[in-house]
Every structure is written in C-alpha cells, then in structure tokens.
Image (cartoon, rainbow, N blue to C red; front, top):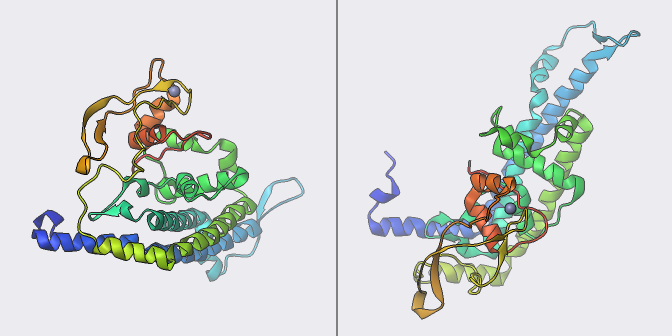
Length: 316
Ligand SMILES: [Zn+2]
C-alpha cells in the first residue's frame, strides 16, 4: 500500500520533501525527461507520415476528376501502417511535452525556490507553451507562434482526447489554421519548428549548469528551512499604489486587500488579496480568462505585463 504524505512521520515527510526539492531544482533532470519525449515524438511522427504518404499514394484522380483507389491490394506492411494517419497528434503532444519540460527546467534553474517544501510553484505547473517559452525570454513570432499554439493544444487535449474540457477551447485555433493541419507540408513545418525550438531551449537549459548556479542549488539544499513566505517575488512586487489595468480593455482594475500584517522579521508587509475586480462593464475576454485561470489572470494583471494578451490555460 502506498502511504499518503500525511501518513508519514514528520521526519520522513521532511526528508521526502527535501529529496523532491533537490530533484526538482536540477534543470538536467527536466532535460532528460524532455529527451525521451522528443525521441518518442520523432519515432511516432515518422510513422504517421509514412501512413499519410501511403494513403496519398493509394488514391488518385481519374480523367473525370473522380477519386479512384489503386487496383492492387495492400501488402501486410501497408496494412499495418495504414491506420496510423492521425499519429501526428500523439507526436505533437509528446513534442509539446518535451518543450514544456525544457522550459520548466530553465525556469526552475533560474528560480530554484519555485520548487520548495515538496511542491512546485504554480508558475511552473501550466501547459501553456507560449507563456512558458516567453518566460524563458525566447521570442517566437508569426507562423512559429501559431505552430507553438498548435503544440499547446495537443498537449492540453488534442493529443489525448477527442474533445477539450470545454467548447470554447476549440476556438483557440482558427478554422483556417486547423484546416492547414491536413497538409503534410504544414505538419512538417510544425514538427520541424518544435525540434528547432527544443534545440534552442537545450542551450538555455545547459546555461543553468554553471558552477555558480550549482553552488546556489547546493546552498539552498543545505539551508535551514526558511519561514514560509507568500511568494518569492522581488520585495517591491506588490505596490498597492500602482495602478493596474485589464489587459484586454485597459479599464482600471483593483485588488481588494483582505488583510495586511507585518512581514517576516518585520520586513515589509504580508498582504492577502482578493481576486482582481474589473469595473462594469466587464469585458468578455476578462470573464473567459478568469474562468480559465483566475490565478494566472491575477498574476498577469499584478505583474503589470503589457503588450500581447496573456494566453490562459485551464487547469487540466
Ligand atoms: Zn476588460
């Protein structure tokens, strides 16, 4: 029987958390998982493309423009590969998961305290690849962004379910973008982009293994447990006087303060906030964003990010 954490004696539970933190904070561990996923993705993708090529070779058009099947029967090998024409979906999911692992490895390398007390910070539990990649300071633009979004959708649902958790998720890609996925050239473009991005992220992840970074992780592992803090943002992260705005319609947004008390060692304040309040009329996109990920939305408004709208991921 597997014991739940709460059943463990305190010392054992502490040790378990310590080992978890140590494992979680080492970027290469995330990278090893990513490698396996990316390799599996490549194998399945090649298989799926074999099936698609076979399907294309079996059917042709006659003089009237009608679809005709070739006359000779399938060979046993062809019969085996033929059902795999949709395999690219699983390959996209795995490739996206490899990207997800690499970005998370980079982010925990840069912010080791995001793995703390046996748990991952919410900043590294989402599946929104666009957001994760952006937070690694990698710029993805134009068609590549559409490709990245397509990979996200396959990680979140399209690689593993026939429908998403809710209908509005389907609208994240336009019909035109989805129709393009019927062409082998487009699928190749998405897959090749994913592999290029992985190569780029590999370099960034390796950068997290300098002697200084490693020493920092070791020091953190040896440090006595810190008093719990509400977050690990910079000290000036919360400035109540700073105006905040809806990222979609730019109306001013307020964070009602539920409670405020002196922070640890009398430094600053520990403030508990309510969800951000949007003035009437509340715009549609705000409502959707809040339904999908209230925490992510609050964080987005809070950190005062500007520019392109945040893409929200519903918790899966
Ligand atoms: Zn708004």
